[in-house]
Image 1 (tube, one colour):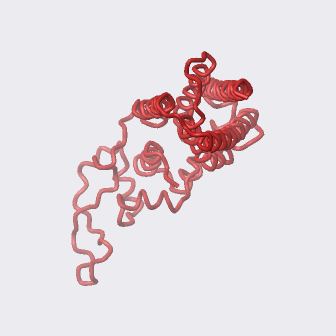
Image 2 (image 1 turned 135 degrees about the vertical axis):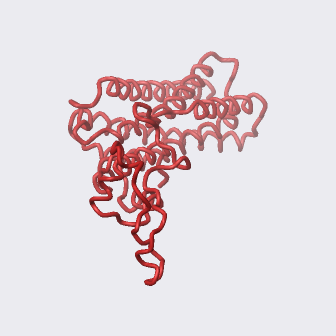
Image 3 (image 1 turned 30 degrees about the vertical axis):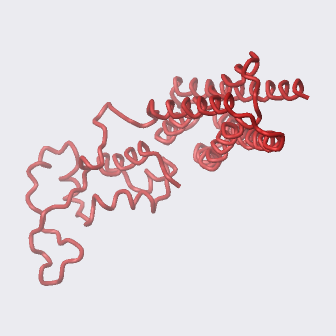
Length: 281
């Protein structure tokens, strides 16, 4: 599983800058502890004593005055053991940036993601205007289109339902996150199937209802990109704020809006698709 870069940065910041344990951070962010250790290990190749860990803790004015460490680096032979060596960095470096205090990239959705979604839909519409599929391709396109709706809408409905159960206090956020991680590929597979099969179903681009359906699909795609950012924001909440009562009101409203928008757009596209198919027959 590939975790979002923002989530990775947040996890490393908590371990290295805030001094939280790997186990606690892994549980908070729904990350496998072994995965988090792999992220952190390149920054800390030796085990420092408690006194040294207190010295290098951020905010300690003595941190900049720490002399060269005498702790041996793993891999040196016994004869070199104890010889002063350069202290290895255990705090983030420019290669792995951590946002300054008050600035966080967690939950940020970049404009390029929205642009890619819009361009993909525009390409599907352009191909639909240019192509004249045969009767056989038309039937194949309809089958793929229906499968895309079934897979995508089914996965979206389960995710939205689990989200509402979490807001009602009936599900734990870790359980919801695992479901979201498992269902997200299915949702995007369904959307890709819809866009790929759109030129094959030969939509009537002169009809108003067709453009309403295209608008609904656009909302589905854009809302899906936005929801990824909301999911990451939820993962970075402290454990004490992961129930409905303690979740920030703004974030709760965004979750409600995302779920309502998703269902409305999907149902609009489905109903118009059924109407178009009935009119064609």
